[in-house]
Structure formats: C-alpha cells, structure tokens
Length: 260
View 1 (cartoon, rainbow, N blue to C red):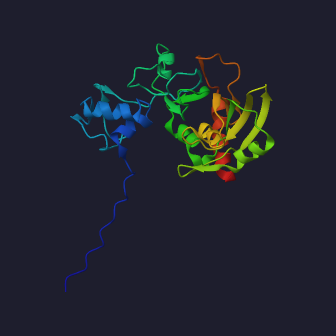
View 2: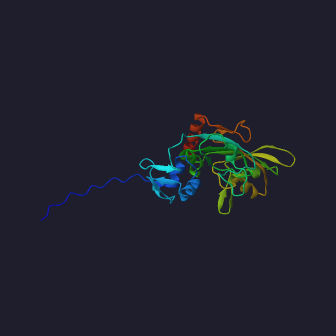
View 3: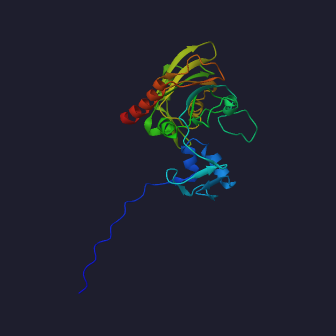
C-alpha cells in the first residue's frame, strides 16, 4: 500500500487585475476611451511587449507599463471646480468641433482630469473634475444619493400643486424622474426661477421632468453639489478644491449611501 501523499497546498488567489485601459484611467494618465485608442495604436507596452488589447489584465504594481515609451506612475490627485458656460460640451473631444471644457483648461499645467458627472451643452454652472476615479465614482453612483442643486428658469409660473407633482415624479421612457425638493425662488409676469434638488441624475433629468408637465426650461444652472456651492467663481473659470471641500464631498457620499 502506497503511503498517502500530503494534500497539495492551495495557493492564495492573486488580487484581481483590471484591464489595461482601466488601469491607465484609474491612475489618472488619461480617460478610458483615450487609453483604449492609444493601446490599439500600439503606444502602450507591458513588460517590454506592445499590447493591443485594451481589456488585457494588467497590474501596475508588478508590471512595467510604458505609455509612449514613458513609465506610468500615479499622478498627484487633483480636484477642481469649473463654472461651465452655456454652449460648452463636457467631453475630451467633440466630433462636431464644438468647444469643450478642456479648451478652458488648456495651458493650465494640469494632469488629465475626468468630469465628475455631466452637464449637457445647454446647461451651465458647477462642474467638478478630478483624476481620482474612486472619489469621483462615489459622488456619481446613484446609490450614494449626493444632492445636486439647480436654479432653473422656466417659461411658466408654477403653483404649489405643480411643485408637489415634481416631487411625486413621472415615468418617462421607462425611467422614473422626480425631484427631491422643488421651490419657487421668484417670478415675473411670464416666467419664474425654481430651485430643484436631485439626489440622483439621469440624462436630461430636469428638462424631461418639466417637459412631462408641459414646461420648457429656459436656463439651467447647477449651483451646488452636496454642501459645496458654486459661489462667486466667474463663468468659464476654475479653481482647486480645498482639502476640506474634498473631504466634505466624500463624507456627503458616505452619508447619502447610509441614509438609503
């Protein structure tokens, strides 16, 4: 009878690795779409070999990754707030040649920054940008319910019944659209300004919600995210966030997730 062999030791599973394009994005080198394009163009190598598959797993802690023959390293985390003007596209590049928020940041000496959430071309106001993808995700994931406050000019003078209906919400194209708070700020003879607070943001959320009630948006300005206001930042200008603001926004995302 042969002696029994000792059971083979099972090696601990290695930490999960992300695709190469995501690695470049998470390290703040460029956006994920820009990384995918660069990889397919043969501009990225891993351990001396050019990689053409953006989804190939990579580990920057164990592998040498070069982008345009330069080793990648995590950039210092940068957080800025921009007062986006109307008519500017929130995109790294626009196929129609329109001005983008990155045109406002050129020659600023900043690393690549991604927008934290979106504002459509016709909307204006507070836009955050950062190369901290984890922080950004916490602010934008619906489950964290971070309040976003907007001042909205409309072509009507809403009464309290309509404001209540905005809180009740509507189902439009299979999505439920509702406001967390809606108040009348001021009005003239033909139009009014509302303050609308969302704790989640769907595509063109406020415009679609109001349109469902026959109301047209004339202007839409985001004036705050969490407890951080846009303040007196001039249109088209930007500034770095203070450490306390970065931490307060992170705390707001944690509180929002815990409260739901």
